[in-house]
Image (cartoon, rainbow, N blue to C red):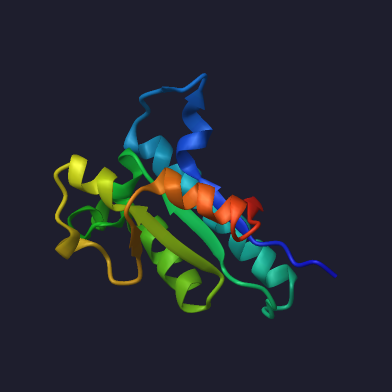
Length: 136
């Protein structure tokens, strides 16, 4: 039986004909929360026993700011659920280094459960082509 690996690309949600549509942080946070809740429900449905790698959440563009200490209070619900699911090895949150540097954020204030990738789009390509991930 083939086990599927999944990833979430938040930018794809707003990328229409290659034009990034500006959206508010509240909308991005709500979409991310919904995806996290979906991953949690899947984990619970599987009897808390997953036999495949964690769901990879590849975050790039403006949503990367959600995972920085200075933004914790306004994103507490999302961050707390992401931290819990990461600890349970349900998800793996990866943020784009290029995106947070471009946004003027300091990598030192990145939340400790989050890993980085140099370029989010390159990581998506690697996951699809090399690791055979599919969209969640």
